[in-house]
Amino acid sequence: ETIDYSNRLYLNLFDGSLHFSQTILQDEGVYQCEAKNEYGTVTSTEAILSITESTCFDGLLSPHETDIDCGGIYCTTCNYTYSCKIDSDCTGDLVCLYAFKLPSQLHYISPANP
Image: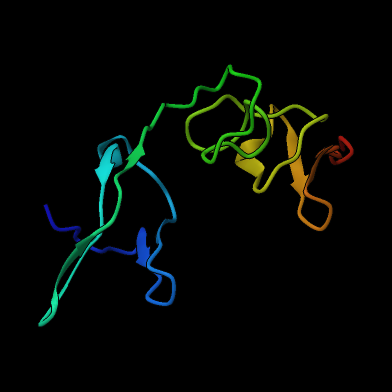
């Protein structure tokens, strides 16, 4: 099957390597390069790509997480001891201090009662 190159896949023509910017479960399989010209055909050795789903509870920083097991679109929010990228990565009333990429407590000041 011929690869349909997308914005996730890049073929380096200099060294012939195939790069994935993000992998999905459907990328799993056996990959092989075949080059043809007027002198013949050459086929590379097989490369096996195995994909395992990461979880939000594996103690590892996965590509879809903001910090280890928190943040991003799939995991729970991060508390003040973890890094963040945007406010929605943070737990409760924490906000992300963008310059430092660390959550911080946001203090609300109520107007005085008349």
